[in-house]
Amino acid sequence: MAVPPISPTILCVDDSEGHLKILELSLGAHHYQVELARNGHEALTMLESLTPNLIILDIDMPFMNGLELATRIRRIQRFNGVPIVVMTSQVRDDQREKAEAAGVDLLLHKPMQGKNLAGLVTDLMRAGREVDSAPAESESGEPSGS
Image 1 (cartoon, rainbow, N blue to C red):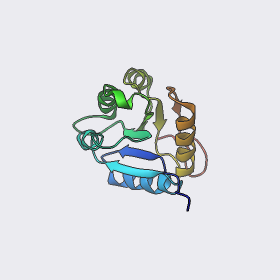
Image 2: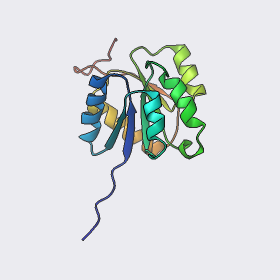
Image 3: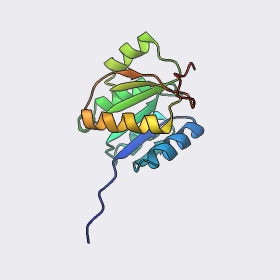
């Protein structure tokens, strides 16, 4: 009997339960194993025993924002090749520069449709690390203005 392939693991970190649920459902529907953390401290604790294939962070979290968390993750050698995606409701030029300095691979404007997010996640894991930004699309498929 063949052993089924192991699904790639994605760690999602966000202080919004609603956003975590959306990430879990949309990425899970594309056969990713999704682990959830509600803040940076919880994520760092989880990363002591977890090596995800990709990490998605919210930029605006209490105690430790997504860029601070990305910086701390990048200091841990075993995560150097793990892509980090940061999501924010407002992408500003200064955030792009700070994201690049923190070792972030992709800065996304949220909310994102699950199908679009899963496609970007797949592409990022295949392509390797590259800092970029991509606009979210609304449910109508038009760029989101939030």
